[in-house]
Length: 112
Length: 109
Image (cartoon, rainbow over all chains, first blue to last red; front, side):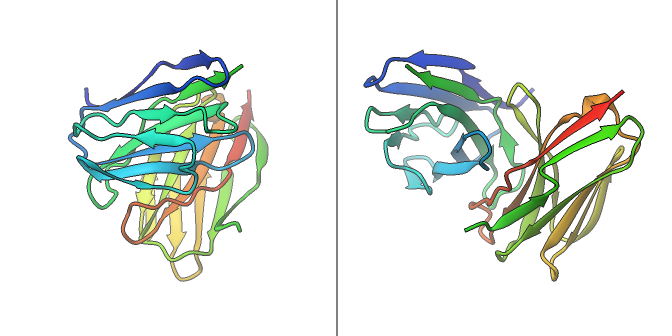
């Protein structure tokens, strides 16, 4: 079955360490997205990519980096520059134009 | 700024009740998603609609583009409907979503 896989589901890191969250899709979707969700707030866009080797900053890109070397994969690195990294991170993908929008199951990152 | 307003924020219902969740938005959009998020965090897209009404099982979604308003209805609610429901309008290119903060629904047996 096609879908999006995020791993791991829970992740703990020490403050000051970079951490990379994985997102893989086998839906043949062109576009992929990373969102952050904090309690009581809506999802906020971190980065998105409409095509391989290209990506754009979202509303809260500072302290994060991404790569899109393959169509299926869009890993997100939370760097030590991100001041408040503890959050729930959701990856999504869609066909060009936004149809077929599909979310992953999320990764809950806790920085201690 | 709040491009998307959902109401109510929290809703508790008895099993079998008819439920309505409302969404108003201020931006120009091409379509609107209703999303369901369960306690584990994963999100499922229930509907994407750009006009009129869509029905899937006990769920009905309507949208009025001119009034910038959408509603999600659940008929004969069931405890398994307990989740957070999120309204997500999509701007014209389809790449930018605006998200409401969600409506937390609890259906009591």
